[in-house]
Image (cartoon, rainbow, N blue to C red):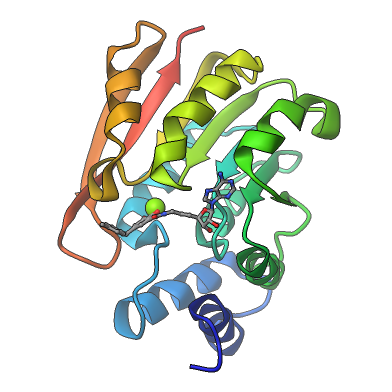
Length: 214
Ligand SMILES: Cc1ccc(Cc2cc(O)c(O)c(C(=O)NC/C=C/[C@H]3O[C@@H](n4cnc5c(N)ncnc54)[C@H](O)[C@@H]3O)c2)cc1
Ligand SMILES: [Mg+2]
C-alpha cells in the first residue's frame, strides 16, 4: 500500500528482469500482471499482434499515445531498426517516471523519447520540436475518448502520410466507438480488426489497424 501499482511493476522488473534484455522486461511485467496485480498493459496476447505489425512495417518513426509503465514502449522499441525513433507521450508524471526506469532497464533509452505532456498539446509541436515529418506508425493506447480527436489532429498537422498505420488498443473493451466508426467509414482509411482478449483476462478485446490512404 505504501507504493503505487506502477512502482510495484517497476520493482518486479528490477527484481526479475535482466538489464538490457527487453524480452525479460516484458516477461517480468506480464508475470506480475497475470499472477499478482492486473494492470492496463497491452499484454502478451495483443502484444504479439503489436509485434507482428511493427516487424512487418519496420517503421523509422513511431508515435505512442499513452506510455503508462512503458510495457508497449519496450515491445515496440525492441523491434525497431537501428536509426528508428519512438516518441511516446505520457501526461502523468508519476507514470512517466516509472516508464523511464522500465525503458532504461530494457536498455532502450537511446531509441525512445518519452515526452511528458498531453497529446493534444504536443501533436501540433511534433514537427518543430522533434524534427518529425510524418509517422510511419502510431500506437493509440491512452484515454479512449482521445483516440478520435487526436487522429483528426494528426491529420490536420500533416503527421500522417499515404501508408501511415494507426494501431489502436481496446477498440472493444473499454471500447472506442466514435474512433472505430470514423476509421471504418472514412474513405481515407483502410481498416482491419484483430480479435483478441483484454490483457490477462478472457474478455474480448482487439486491436484496430488502419492504413491512412492520404
Ligand atoms: C470498463 C473498463 C475499464 C478498464 C478496462 C481496462 C483497460 C484496458 C486497457 O488496455 C486500457 O488501455 C485501459 C485504459 O483506460 N487506458 C487509458 C490509458 C491511459 C494512459 O495514458 C495516459 N494518457 C491518457 N490520456 C493522455 C493524453 N491525452 N496525453 C498523454 N497521456 C495520456 C495516462 O496517464 C495513462 O498512463 C483500460 C476495461 C474496461
Ligand atoms: Mg490499452
